[in-house]
Length: 312
Image (tube, rainbow, N blue to C red; front, side, top):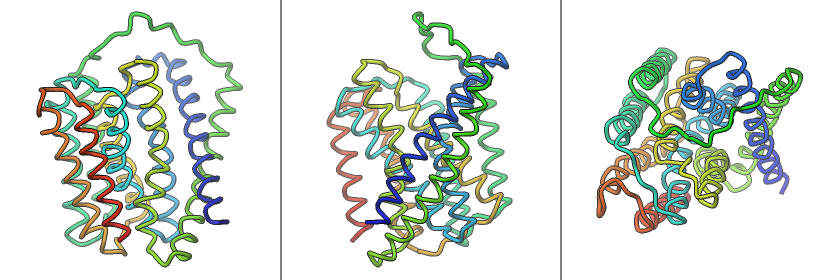
């Protein structure tokens, strides 16, 4: 029970910390007069990936590399098999052509790059992390230079800046909450793994990864209820790209990550590659550039099968 409470408390702190950090980051961007599209693709993406980043860095430094890897691989599977599935079960979404020209190919490239680096020797080295971060940087430069925002919201009201003391307070609170939440989450996950006699990887790939995907799930459901098209396939694919290239890239630069539980290489990574690839045919069949409830059922079915195989 104590381990479960640690995990729950850790997730609450991580979600709150990520939200505070996001508010502070967006406010700082406005003060520096950075365009909104730049904020969306860089600052917001980084802030919403902060829980995964802090958990992965802390886990790797604390000697639990499988938590660091399982967290990211599991989050990427959950983003598509759970978050995207729930979104399109509630309401179908139209997919922009950026999906097959940019978003999906880059996600597959990032996934295959990670697979190539980790599968050969079971270690994500520092120089490989540098390659991943450079790839992310080039992708962001490409987005900012060659892709214009698809939709300009005419009802968009100018954002009001926060008082400077609030920005500093949010930055401080966000940082402390993320650090404290990651410590609680890791402690609870390791304790739960020992209590149930499973590896840290199994806990990371299921409970921890779903927990760190809760902000994306909440945002998706709220967007559907409000009938906004704010949450799109591109947002979730962008999150997956960021998880692989930024979270694992930065973590491995700080400390190389070694696979301990081979299940990550024989099972999890192939599920991640498979569900990532599957999104392409689902988008085009039966109706072009549209995802509906049937696709949602397929994705949920795959996610349930993945969890069953992983735990079993």
